[in-house]
Picture 1: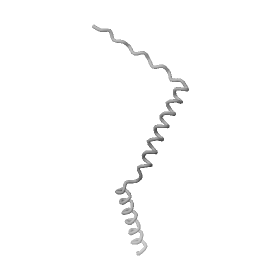
Picture 2: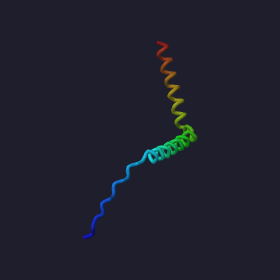
Picture 3: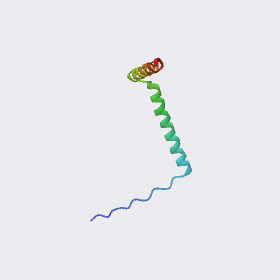
Picture 4: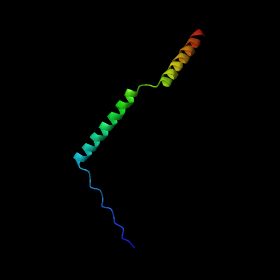
Length: 66
């Protein structure tokens, strides 16, 4: 039988390594956010919002007519 090696416990992160990790995560999140903002709003979503606005205006005008 072969001997199983027991993995060594991970070293406790230092304040600097945690700060570096947090900075890396923050940069990646910012980059992801910027990409999404640059994509803009899809046309089908804008059309759906326009239809919703029209339906709300129609409902309000019916309430005002009563």
